[in-house]
Image (cartoon, rainbow, N blue to C red; front, side, top):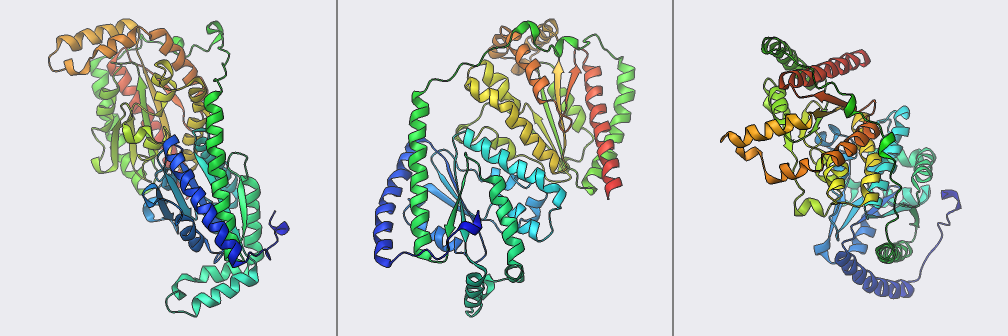
Amino acid sequence: MLEKIDLSKKIDKETYKDTKTEQSERLGLLQRECKEAGIPVMIVFEGMGASGKGTQINRLIQALDPRGFDVYANDKSTEEERMRPFLWRFWTKLPAQGRIALFDRSWYRQVTIERFEGKIPEMALPEAFQDIQSFERQLTDDGMVIIKLFLYISKEEQKKRFNRLEASKETSWRVTEEDWKRNKEYGRFLEISEEMLQRTDMDYAPWTIIEGTDREYASAKIITQVADCLEDALRQRKIRGERKEKEVPVRSEKYQSGVLSGADLSKTMTKEEYKREMRRLKETLESLHSQIYRLRIPVVLGFEGWDAAGKGGAIKRLTSHLDPRGYKVYPTSAPNDLERVHHYLWRFWNHVPKAGHIAIFDRTWYGRVLVERIEGFCSKSEWKQAYQEINEMENHMANAGAVVIKFWLHIDKDEQEKRFKERQENPSKQWKITEEDWRNREKWDQYESAVNEMLVRTSTTYAPWVVVEANCKYYARIKVLKTVVEALESEIKKSKKNS
């Protein structure tokens, strides 16, 4: 790819001036139209050191309304960022609908600079590339426009620019030993960049190579390319709006996997057994919590289940002997206004735990394939593609070393009705029951079918579903604690073995 690029391309000042004036006016108009259409945009600047990324970002934003964009400079990751999956810091910076985010270096640092410096093992590269491809595809599927620009200059031009920067006191700090090392080993870094471009040049997020020797030529090409991409996005949005959603054939209910029907809800436990087991497991969990903190193992626990199935009670017993500084419980309700103008997974990525900490979700990202699916809050194509998106998100967490476990607390319809009535009759628990809970019972069969499909399609080796037989609260709480204890013991053993 790069060996075919003609780095001698130039543009005269008059042509540049005319192009800049014309394209700036066009880009400003397109920014306003994207805002009205609610189209989010990410513009990524990557490339060789001293290729002019900062200069070109500054020139590009002169044509934009400053109230509608944010610029992020992504140098070495901070300690806080290193304690989470590497894409976490970019998920948390996603632009809202109608806004633009510009990145001076991006998630590609992981597979270029950090790879060059030996900070990422070669064996981890396939997973990193897969995570990047999934990240970009998920965002573009959701309507994000991703514009990726790679600024390219020769080894000789780079050396000349480094020398010029070092000659001035005001700019000498910008050139580091690492920069000179990449210049000295320019060929190796170029090969790494070439592989990155080839493996991530996708139709949904293609790369544009910017010949960076002549800054005016580069600037003219960048502003024109960005404008072209926004114009195309608006055109595609209009086409999609006019095109009716394709109907997806519904599989026969008769042959669907009935995971829930195989759960034995007669499982029970006496109060004495419950107290004895609870005491033992809490003591063990207290010790394990200290160990995962020392070993920097992140833990993600998700709780789903029928209304009144006992999620809150299970979470309460699980956390009763944990250090409150090392875990956090996130109750999930309907998305607020800010969350609705972002990708549906954005609000959950904001709560990914750092290494050594535990995040507990009382209802989770699976709302996409449950309540949003049944109640019609998203389209059929959106909840259909969510299975893969969720699997990829959980896989990225697991690749970063996280223990990921999801619990489905299962009760039968009669037990739910019994618990609903108990809540209505108990003044201290009446707040737990609403008219919506009763209405949801009318759609029990629809939800059961959706849950069965969810369990089959998203239970993986790296993020398994555990169906908890919860007609007996004692049994359910013990099963949850026992599952967590066994998973942590296994991960700690593996971590110690690898260290």
